[in-house]
Length: 47
Figure 1 (cartoon, one colour):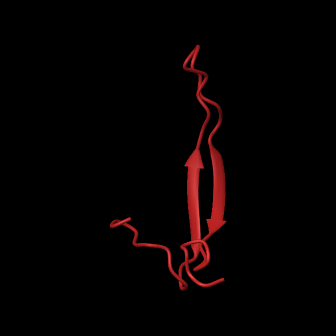
Figure 2 (tube, rainbow, N blue to C red):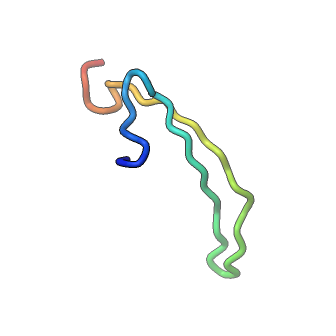
């Protein structure tokens, strides 16, 4: 988080990439892209 800062009200979106790995063969899937939005309620704040 130090590199890009923490999510907050002015920057609520978090983007990340991931992929699945077949544990038998080591084959990787294509890269998946995802996005989520941070809210104060998610962080344990008031709803």
